[in-house]
Amino acid sequence: MKESDSELWTQLFQDKPIPSVSLDTFQTQLMAEIVAHPVNFREEIRLTVRRKWGLGLAISLLVMGIAFGAFLWFKSTLVFQGLNVLLIMLSGLPHIVDLEQVGRWILKNMLLFSELKTGLGLLWGVVSGPILGVLSVFVIVWSFNPVRKHSI
Image (tube, rainbow, N blue to C red; front, side, top):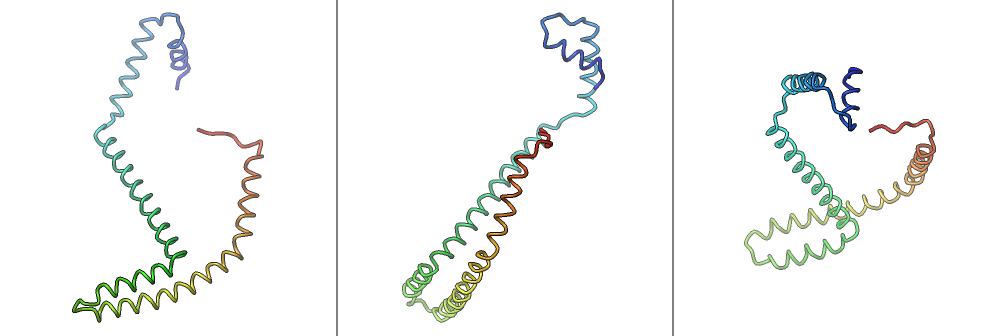
C-alpha cells in the first residue's frame, strides 16, 4: 500500500473533510481493484455451504466412530448378549443357518477383540507416560517463550 493510501485511510476516520480530488482518486483506485478482482458470490456461498456440510459430516463420523468404539470397548459382553437375543428372536426364519455362521464369526472376532483390548491397554500403559511428558514440556515451553510473536 502506498503512503498516500495510508494517509487517506487515516483521514477517513478523522473529522476533517477529505479533499474531493483525493477522494475521487481513492474511489477510482478502489473501483479498479474491484473490477480487476471480481468476487463470484454464488460460488463463495456454495463453497461455504459445502464446507459446513463437510465439517458436519466429518464431526458426526468422528463422534459415531468414537462412540461405537467406546461402546464395544466397555460393553462387549452387552453386545454379545444382544446378539444372542437377536439370534433367538430370529430362530424361526428359514436362513437361520447362515445367520448362525455369521454369529459364530462375530463371536470369534469378539474373542480377538478382547485380546486386542488387552494388548492396547498394555501398550497404552507403557506409552502414555512419555507422550504426556513430552506434551507437558511442549506446553510449558510454548507458554513461557517471550520471543514468540502473536500473528493474526
